[in-house]
Image (cartoon, one colour):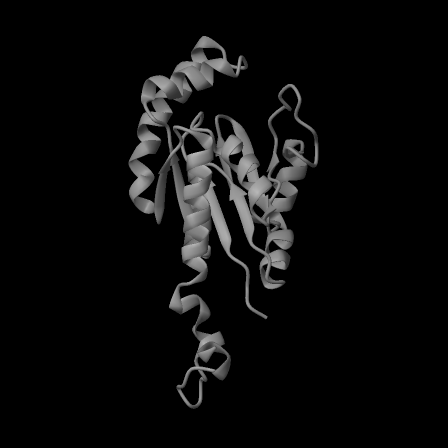
Amino acid sequence: MKKGLLIVISGPSGAGKGTICKALLEKQDLWISVSATTRKPRKGEIDGKSYFFLDVDEFKDRIENDGFLEYAEVYGNYYGTPKASVNEKINNGEDVILEIDIQGALKVKENYPEGVFIFILPPSMDELKKRIIGRGSETPESLMRRFKSAYKELNYVSKYNYAVINDKVDIAVSKIQAIIAAEKCRVDRIKENIIDSKEGIVHEQFYD
């Protein structure tokens, strides 16, 4: 069975990763992995849907049992991607999307380089600051820390396969859909389906 794609969406805090993923899921047949975290839920977040909210001891226990595809400590809290469910979906031919921080994305890339890594950029740093302030969940100190961190995180864009500017969500989503379509046409992903491994010829079904 042909494997599904692992699509990793990340970028600096406030770039709009969550908004893009939500809009993408409405237009594309994808399975989104729910991350686990030790941070406290924000207003409106639901356990098991927004995140799996774990205490620190439970999270560390899962680390010891190799339960995460990646994990990292960010701003004093742990975040991780459950491994088993992601592997199951990909092996069953389903496309999986991960919305994770940059630290986690680079760890996934080390272990799964065939993934599709997309970096979400804000249209400007001023807009990024407005989006973070608009959350209403940051103290002046944490706001400054996140904003300084965002400057540093932008330097990691060269580690990704693609970069998409999130100026207008619908345009950004269309670009990501185009990336997914192009990745599904890459010869190194589909050659086993079009080339006979013994004869080295194109299968008859592709002559139609």
